[in-house]
Amino acid sequence: MSLNIPGFALQPSATRVPTATNYMTSFDFLNQYLPDTYEKEFERYGNRTLSSFLRMVGAEMPSNSDLIKWAEQGRLHIKYTDVSTPAVVNATQAVFTVADALIPADQTMAAAGTASNIAIRKGQTVMISGNAGYAGISNKGIVTVVAGNPDATTFTVEFFEAGGYTGAGTTVDVNEKVSVFIYGSEFKKGDAGMEGSLEPFDTILENNPIIIKDNYAVSGSDMAQIGWVEVSTEDGANGYLWYLKAEHETRMRFEDYLETAMVEAVKAGTGSGAIGAGFVGSEGLFSAIESRGNIFTGAITNLGDFDSIIERLDKQGAIEENVLFLNRQTSFEIDDMLAAQNSYGNGGSSYGLFDNDEEMALNLGFSGFRRAYDFYKTDWKYLNDPTMRGGLVGGAIDGVLVPAGSTNVYDQVLGRNAKRPFLHVRYRASETEDRRYKSWITGSAGGAATSDADEMRVNFLSERALCTMGANNFVLFK
Image (cartoon, rainbow, N blue to C red; front, top):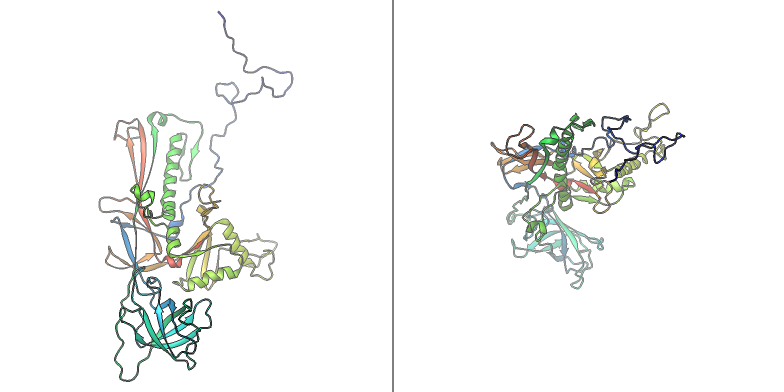
């Protein structure tokens, strides 16, 4: 029979140096040497929450349907950009054919993607301009015939210019394309009135809410166990019970998802795996801008780059005030672009108000500027956070331009026109059920008495959709 004798945990040494036998490798509270501990967690990542974007630029309002629909106005004036003619140079008359049978909703009074007759009528005066590659074509004329009106795609023009048609098209040159828009009308004395009339069509858009859920569970035994680390979270929770931290972090994570889901959500495509599994998705902010808005690709290195954005805004709603939500790199690019406009500040030595001196802190950034419109610039933490969009290469997004203010839309629930922010969230609610932000406790611990499960389970739920109205006024930076 043998007796195993445990070795010494620590063995003295003649010199004061750490050795394999006298160095304590781990802190053990049963050990006679008590470590000097910091009880409170160190918040090394600062405020980790991301939600704030929609609270700044949008609003929330209830909805009691699975489908949210709204109408957006089309353009008031008529322009066709895919028009051809067999006319030759100097012809006094020409027949034009409109090829874009599927008429863009933002340029005509036809509904999006529907085949339509042309909106040009006899007696109207038109401007004819050559597209790219045919810049020499420029004529004005009066429409004398609209073939088969009102189911027409061709019309005849008599030119006002003595020299006739400035183009060089032939029946063989099918690539010659011109743009045509109406600028007025002219009738001879005694003529009858305008034939036919135009009926405006709104663009009908829709979105559907999605259900977002999360939960946190802790056993009754763990709820009764205290820790030595004092925990705290961004929303003020603190104490020595670890489950408090976990529950509050779950809550904050869910609140972030309420925003990021509205920003990132996409509709499930026909034939997709999600559709096959019974999910339909929703249209988020990025998806709405990519399908109905404007996209700027590349770096903003000079004022000309930004001017191209402004020129695009001129062609849309021309909203006076806009907010730029940017990642850090794009924010710096705009700062440098603005600073370069100061001829006395090469290298950025006098950013800001251009009056820095040696006694004041050097301001190397801009919070806003005016260039035809007012632009306010702010960093968007979501685009910088490395656990979310920060640092992405594929599918990276550098920022978004959001128009400030509201727009008039026809609300089908109210049955009248109503003012709505360009961005707003619709959540499911009725007189008996409000699904904006639901939270409830189940189990048999922590005050709950709903089941025999020895736990406390905190449940979170929301059902919501984002309405991006007037997406043609938004710009996505990629």
